[in-house]
Image 1 (cartoon, rainbow, N blue to C red):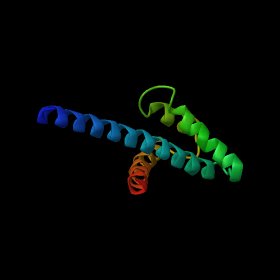
Image 2: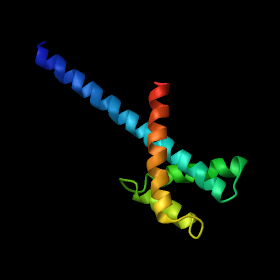
Image 3: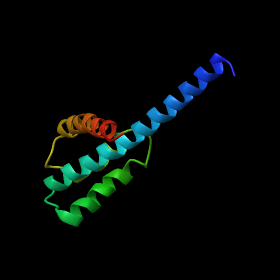
Length: 104
């Protein structure tokens, strides 16, 4: 093996690790968003957990965050402005990523 081959494998391993980290952080962020929205909707306990899972699963509709935003926006219509939802998405992305990194 050459140094180039070793370096290539290292980059591929880092890429795979980073992608896994991003996936876990996005799923965590979506769960946190679901818990936040559930509280705003007055849901508690099992109802809140079930609602949070609907937010997580809504992210599989299409690539990107817009599917999650649309779901939250529709569910929180009249309760929270779109800008507040987007701000919470950004805030919770950072928190989720930090949580995942600290768990690793």
